[in-house]
Image 1 (tube, rainbow, N blue to C red):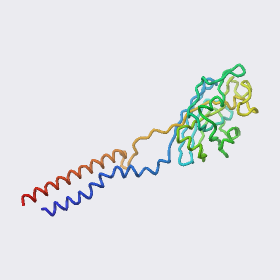
Image 2 (cartoon, rainbow, N blue to C red):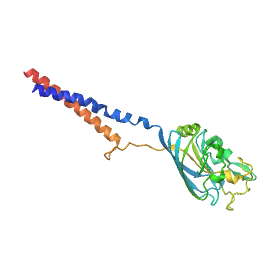
Image 3 (tube, helix red, strand yellow):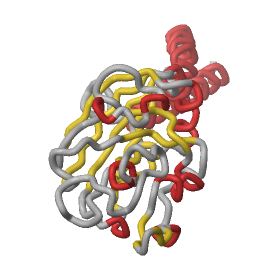
Image 4 (tube, rainbow, N blue to C red):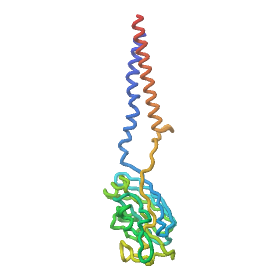
Length: 257
């Protein structure tokens, strides 16, 4: 009897620590994936620029590789809309109160918003270069009032760092301030390029990129990893209790003998 009890006790003592440590081991197993993040932005219109469109953006970032999806609608049809990651500032969209009066009209240009969303870090072009040098490559940006943009691109170290730190902002440009269905010079020349009308480069939509909410990781049996960890901890605790009980029984048996 004593030999059987000792064997059972030895088996429980060997298993229980493993079970008790299982939650930490499982949690540590995910540490190598912290480099991959998902960011979301809701793109809201600048009403001061007479914009009523809307949109969303999603970025899956791993290292410097970004899979980018931008959807927006309600902007000027038949016209190109420059779009960028703006970086390195406060990581927010400017309030409309920073708009200034120019040529007798109050509107927001790209420079007005720079202290809030920063400069261009990445140009979300449809093909070719995506650096700030392509910030006004109007022939390589999405066109129209209903856009679904998707592309995998390589970010600069500075841009990737800004997105991870929460200071990345998606800005879509191009407005129709006077509602005549085209970019014209009713607001004067662009603050970014005097050869372009201000309407073509003024910000239309804006949204800060924020980390996606994360919940418990799902396990392979339909439950969550959190639940599995809790179950493992409970099992480990039960085994330790059983081991203690077996040890007590062994002590009582020895005293009786």
